[in-house]
Length: 275
Image (cartoon, rainbow, N blue to C red; front, side, top):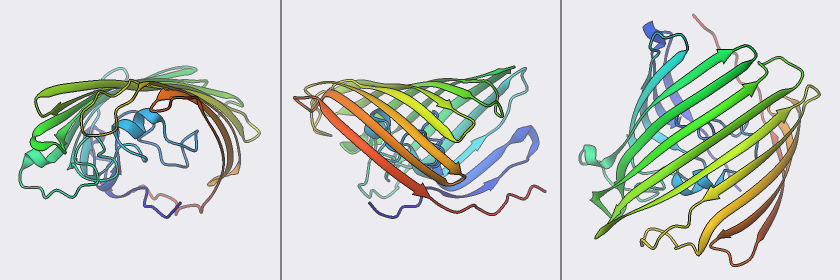
């Protein structure tokens, strides 16, 4: 449908405590799906929960972030970010509306902590985060998003067959003139990778019916969606995916169906050089 820039950043890492600093057009560290590029995502479409809370590309923002490791028996990694509240990933804030930054009230702030526990042959990830910023009903009206993500990978990378199980949930609270509104959305997925370049996955999506707010159309019912996917990836940056989805509720009076056949091709980037 067009050409887009996935991310472009300047990064400084390999610092004490594994500190990393990034600046530019970034993919957020919040959750699993937003942090993945289109090449890494199992499904050719974006999950409805992320489309609702952030936008078609997930939580992509223009700004800077910082992350570091705290000494612990497992990977314990807090992170912080500050960004513009406008852009394609800021759907719950100013969105695509171009609003000048006159004070810190016009910025979106992210804070979270990632936990990764590796116990052969299972890797468990748990993350909690919050994103705070203004919404487009006025500079004194704010949106708060609270996220929790849980993932499991079995067995470790390099095994002939791998299983990935993930779930992400978002609670969004927004101030609108005269009241506060809230809605919940989330997803769960199971992906199986086979040694012969094939993969299969299923994703379940939920999005609570949105109350009337003037910010977006009101839903008639909760949205429920199931998506089945089978993919073939014969080489790096070359894949063919077939996805079939069944959707009910939301703003539809009847069940909806979708079929997607997506071919993706690219080129290998230059190898990373580590000093």
